Image (cartoon, rainbow, N blue to C red; front, side):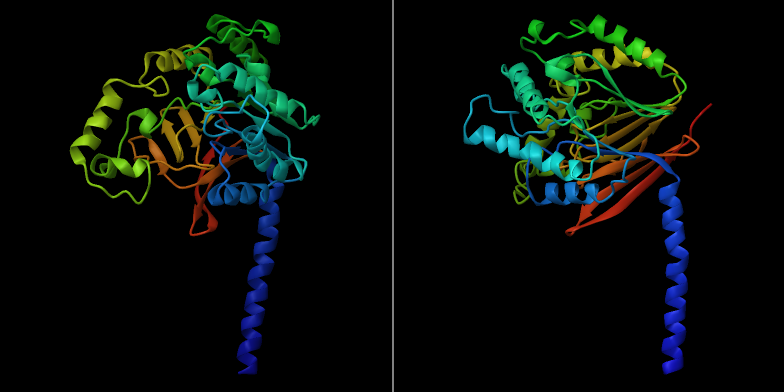
Length: 370
C-alpha cells in the first residue's frame, strides 16, 4: 500500500511539473491582452463574478480592459445629485476599481442605456458619466470618445495591435445631440467617416479591434433572431419564472421586431447606414475584428473574412441562436479575452458563469494575414 501511494504521488508530481512550465510558456507567449466586457451596468451576483474572474486574468503591464457600453442601467448617469446618482457612480466603480487596483488601463465606451436609453437627456447623461470618470484624476481610466463627442479614438495597445473605439449610439440617437461646447473634432457622420479613414491609414499593417457598443453582426434579438422558447413563452424576457405559454403573442412580437425594427436593431435603416459607411472605410482589410456588446450573450461570428466578437453579458442575459456563421452562441453571463501572441495572431478565449463558477467556454485563433 505504501509503495502504491508513493507511485501515485510521483505520478501527480510529474503531471504538475509538466503543467507548470506549459502554463508559464502560454503566458509568456502573450504579447498583450485585452479583456472585453459589455453591458455590466448592474451590480448583481453574476456581474460580481464576471468582474472578479476577469480581474484575475490581468497580466501585469500587458492588459487593457474595455467595457463595451451600457455601463449604467437602466437610463445612464442620474443628472441630479442624490441617492440615485450616488448609486450610479458606485456601479461604475464596481467595474473599474478591481481592474485599476492591478494597474490595468480601463476604457469605457457608451451604450444606448448610457444615453438615457436613447431618451432626450442622453447627451447630458453621457457627458455626466464622462465627467465623473475624468474627475477620478486617473490617467489609466478613461471614457472614450470624450465628453459626448462622436470622434473615433485609437488606443495603441502594442506596436502591432490598435483598438479603434467609437460611439455607435451617437449614430442612432433620435434626439438633439449638438455638442458645440465640447470641442469635438467631428460634428457630422461625414466628419466621423473621414476621421476613421485617417486613423485607419495610420494603423495599416496592424491588427485592429474595431470596438463599439452595437455589433455589426448578431444572432440575438437585436439581429432579428428569436428562439422557439421566445415564441412560446414571451414573458420569460421579463422574468425567467414566467413560464406562461402565449405562442401567438410571442410569434407576433418576433415578427413585428423583424418587420418594424427599432433603432437599436440591426435591420433599422439608421443602423444599416452606420454599418455601411464604417465598413466602407475598412473594406477588404484582413486583420480587422469587430468587438461589441449590446446583445446580452456571448457570440463569435465568422462570415467570409469578417469577424464579430459579441461580449454583452456582464450583467444581463438574453437569448441567442446558433446561426449559420456563428461558431459560438451562448446566452450565459461572461466575458472575452483577446490575447495578441508573438506572431501577431489573436487568441480569443470566452469565459462563462456556470453554477457559481467561471469556466472557459470557447477558443478561437485568428491568424495574422500578411
